[in-house]
Image 1: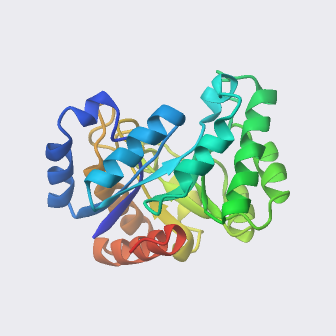
Image 2: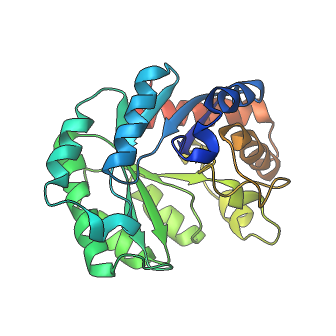
Length: 252
């Protein structure tokens, strides 16, 4: 049994055949899904799916790409959404200095607002980080009670260990399987009890499906790569990462 700790099931590529997507995932041993919101609308769609399917949970948050478009009262709307038990985390939040679709100043404000909310309601966060290591760590340091996961991790071993020391989990996606990726060398030095697996579907399909629409079932390929890295087997990796996901997100 595996948990896809980060997918976007409301995207058209997946939602048009959602039952088929979920059935194919089940066949690959992926049985639980965390559908991650990136703005208010998507967060509501994620929650609607979580209400319809027992094995789907959701999150609510504002992605850094959407920081400049956040409504004035977005925090109150997020707070209301997050009162629901099936919404298990705040996010997707964070900083993205690679694409800079929203300016860094706006990104930081929205990131800090959501961290404050997570601290108030005592729920974990799901955060995005592209080329923003220093600011991510500095800002998270100001919210020492907040825990969560670095989704689709792509930074260095040193950054990973700083985050783990701060109480965060590290989640790997399909990029762990890419040729010439530095991530296997990072992953093998990390403690397994702090690792999660995900797809970020419909994005970042793992090898041998790179470049194609990703699906939650392909969490298995990420887990198989972790098993290879650690000289373990898929059953052991599944057991550990599922236990980690249940602990972080308080899944039943």
